[in-house]
Image 1 (cartoon, helix red, strand yellow):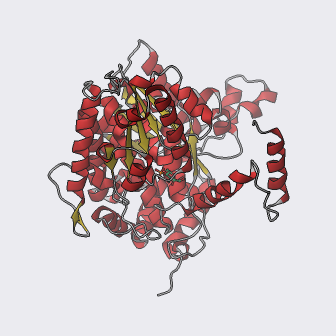
Image 2: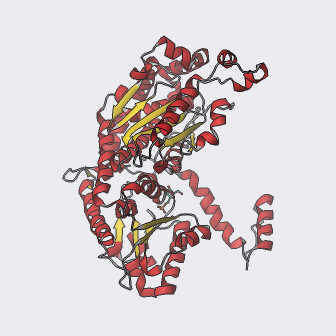
Image 3: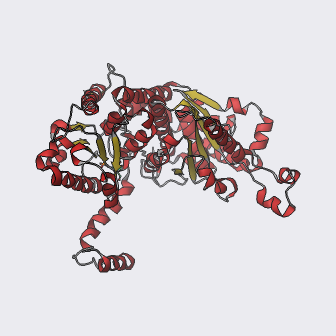
Length: 541
Ligand code: F6P
């Protein structure tokens, strides 16, 4: 049977018709017509609570979205994902990040290999090494304790570790200094190394492929910084690697005994709970790291087993499809009301946009509907004093996810209630706005009524955690991983490849020699040629 787009389905068309009715409703009228929305359009699982009532939909739309998901095979694909089938079809691979958090003693055999046993073998090596560093048994070349840990990686080999370290800082060993280097801009490494003493510094070179130019360039310079101070022999004690490419690691000069492996079935942006999380484990300790995995595993089980109407990743994913594809909203703002989650928006940018920023289906058909939204954000309340003006009164509607934590880890008198009040107020203000009549009734001067009036009708999700712990962070990460999967599966795209990043990398490699003495490629466009010439004229010798 010839492949068709999901947009050809009658259920899709029924949803498109429902979307056309949306401008005739308002969240005010929807809440007035059904005062139970705040308790019915909610779901709970794996320690997280999702209130999706302030979206422009009703239970019927949710049912239609679930019907469409079923027709598009989303639930079969979910089962295939967990079973280790090659759901990454363009790279012929499984996407088994869920296997990274299978409890010890379980077994998952894929192509004759028990991947759960493999995972626990690596975890046990990570545990031993992390404890050695934390307890000062693994020392540097001069016998000093390694109290500085510098992770060198980029993309999924950086964003997950940074986000997790920042999110779990409360649980981290405060005697350790953790730094993260990703940008090939020398400033990143130079600033990360500032004030560190080479004899107390451990480098973790994290790269799935061990061929990423930025990471290898940074690792080479870090190695020079170390060997200039301590000599070549120091590399063995001060450098470890995390990679699937053991031979390339060995060629770089890192001891295979100090290399922590993972597998091609772990995508870069899904890898923070593989050995890529070594810096996290050193920071918070193996027991807390196990809690992180347990939280993700709880969300995996919830996703695999809960009924669609109660299933958080299914709901979050389908609401994303409704807002992006049927209502046409191009972006999603991620607004964590917890300072520890300040790198979550950056982490989710890669997870969502590298996964679902695709324009063809798995069969290679060009889609005729919008796919992956633009994810961005900042912690509240900082965003409130910066870009929320546009969220409230701009001409682009930006649906938002507000992440609220009930119990503060730093409960200073008066702070947390104010923080949570702001989150709840923002979600309500975005939803219900302020009609002109209300502004007038409050005594506003007539010329200002139009300026002070707010439309509302801005969709939001509120995700509430009881407390930010390794467990709840694991659950939150898995929630978004699976919501991304649900969206990709419904859109018919491969959420696990990233062909779009290749071209720029190849072109950069070709431009590098032209920035020094190689002749400029005459085939190059006139803009790039002129920019190369301008740079060459100004380049530092
Ligand atoms: O540039 C894209 C990418 O391949 C990401 O998907 C990945 O997370 C990142 O580069 C880093 O790759 P690696 O871990 O192989 O260095």
